[in-house]
Length: 357
Image (cartoon, rainbow, N blue to C red; front, side, top):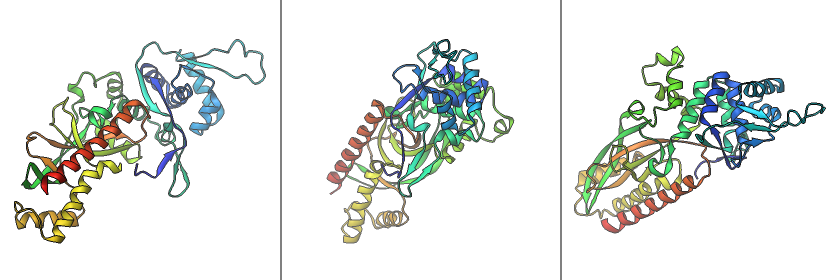
């Protein structure tokens, strides 16, 4: 990966959706404490020896506030101290908490969400995502982040569902030869959200945010999804990639990446740029390309714009920027997505170079 920052933690955990919402109703500290305690289960079972000390360490709050948050969670049936009776007369009791999930509605998130991040270029320790969202004291922000984790579909969407958010780019076609249209990535034409029309996405978390918007958010010119998305992106918890999709409709898959923060996402564009730089220097472009096309490609390359090939036979293809969580659980799905885009990038680059020479 191109990123220089890396969490000191690996692995992943899950949190129960209903319990997260109940904890958010109690307050910020309770919601974040539940996230910490859920991380302590290490996704094997819903029991952990993590306690107020773990919450204090991750949230950087006084121990008494961490303990109060856990007590509130216990009083409302969200967690149970399994060793309460056993520890009654002990001087330094060590609790063992059970998370009282009643459903299988699990939201998976990485262990790196709660622990500090190391910038390997400087050696500096950066705040954990948990610390970053704590300071804003907005439970809707917490809900929104886990809403995005819930609906992230890397394998099929290369990120968060396009029904939640995406940006569509203009495709500037500048020339065709063989089966390829040579294109320049254009400006964003519009951005969209269709969550209200998608029952799966119009879920309990969505409704909880919608019904409890602060007036300053409700008065924004944009939908609150875009308000919070821009917010989360600004504090570095979301990244984006630009992909060619079969079409705009739900259920249509991405064909290959053309731009993003991961090296392989730029491989196709870089292959095209390398080829055309060579041809421009040699003044031996294919005959199908007119001088104005040569000039346009040369100008685009010099301006640092993204150029990419598009199979001219895919008539409904669109180019969308999609969003994904920057800190991702290292699950089977994450590995499958990385394998998929590696294969796509290599196949398209090879096919493009083979067919235009």
